[in-house]
Each structure stands twice: as C-alpha cells, then as structure tokens.
Image (cartoon, rainbow, N blue to C red; front, side, top):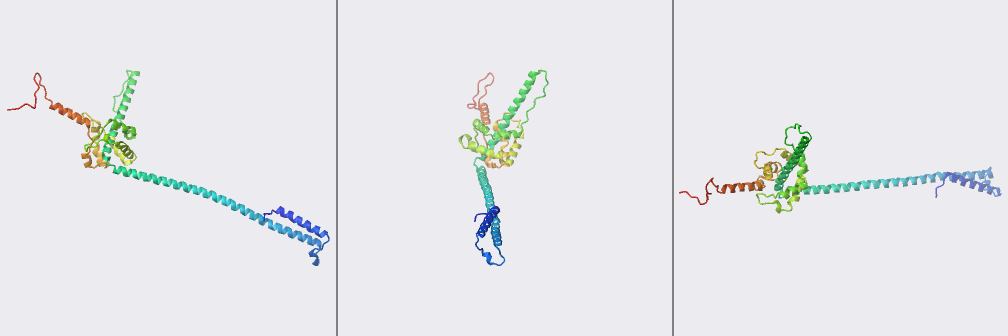
Length: 311
C-alpha cells in the first residue's frame, strides 16, 4: 500500500461521509435502521467516523514505514561510505607495508653484498686515500682564499698590519661531505692507477669504481664508520716526511682504520695486499741508480766499479 498522509486520509473520510449522506438522502434504509434507537443521521455519522478513523490510523503507520525505509537507505549509504574509506585506508597500508618490506629486503641484500665483497680491503685503502686527497684539496682552496683576502687588504691599504698567516683548519665534516662524492671518486681513480702488493690493480677492474662508490655510500650512512673516518681526518698530517705522497700520507691509516676499527681487512690481507706507492718506488729507483752510477772525481777519470780489482 502506498503511504497515505493525514491530510489525504481526512479528505478521503470526508468523501465517504458525503457519499453516505447522499445514500441516506435517497431514502434507502440503512442497515442501522434495524437497530432500535439508531437513526439515519447516527448511521451516517458513525460510518463517516469509522472510515475517517481507519484512514487516520493507517496514515501514521504508512508514514512511519516510509520514514523507516528512508532511514535504512541513509544508514546503508553511510555504511558504504565507511566501507570505501576503511577499505582504501587498508589498501594504502598494505601497499606501504609492501614497499617497506621490499626496501628492507633490498637493504639487507646491499649490506650482505658489502660484507662479502672480495675487494673490500682494497676499497678501504682507496677510501682513505680519497679522504686524504679531499682534505688536501679543501686545504689548498682555503689557503688560496685567505691569501687572496690578505692581498686585497694590502692593495686597498698598503700600510695595513696583517696578523701572521696561519694554516687553515679544515673541518672533518666538510671532508666527509665530499670524499665519497661520485665525481670525487671518479677523479681519484682517473688520476691514480692504484695497485696493490697482491697484484691487483684498480685500472684492470671495471667494476671497482661502482663498487667503491657503493661501499663509500654505505660508510657515510653508518654512524660508526663516519666516526672512524672523522677521527682519522682529525689527525694532523705527518710533517716529518721529506717528500710526502698521497699513498704515503694515507698508508699510516691503513692498519688502524681498515684492520683495527672497521675489520674490512684482516692483518694478513693488509700484509700481502697493501697499496703500492708508485711515486716512492720511482724516487727510490732513481736514488739507487744514482748511487750505482760511478762518480767522476774532480780532475780525474770515472772509475768503473765493475772492472776494478785489488791485488
């Protein structure tokens, strides 16, 4: 049954009452006339009241049913909205968890590779040379900047009294920022053909450069490793060396850093695979050749040590 409002029910009751009155006016005997004391007017009024009451009783019930249906529909819509919302949140969380798990898997694989890389001892020594070279480059740039500033002051005021020039202090943090930079590593390997006492040479291994960058990146993202390199870079350069080279300045850190602190080299690996210093070897060869060459005494003739004999 379609919903019936109270106004429609009242109108319907009025129509029925009018029809009953018309029927009574026609002269037909209503069923109520058989009852003693029940007149036609009473019958008309009773019929109208009964029909109106029935319609009025049905109207609120239909209205209540219609209101309940609308409420259920609205409630269903709200539940669907919540379902879509929480379903979307759950899907997003699932994707995020999968991404995190994949990243963790990749990270574990990278750390496993770094721990088992067969040339990590050579890479450790090369990272140290990169740190020493980077510190030297920054030192030179800073020293040049200070000298240019002093020159500008003297040009503006020749009588200016300048304090004594001091060696610039280089922050280890600045060195750590650049020593593992890809461009810095490429420059290091391009200008230095590192070789080791075990016969390994970086120029012969095309995978060494990318591997060194990865290991260096891992080191710079590891708190313990950065502390080790920072402590190394804070140690002053050995000024006692007559002719320091990049390898000679770096070699003093090979054992403390690569063996004792990081464990990237065993003592035996370093003993048989230490980085070779080509400049020092060339200078030593030149000195040896100089000593072997016969000297010419003043005003005399060179003596051939190979043919000299004593009786």
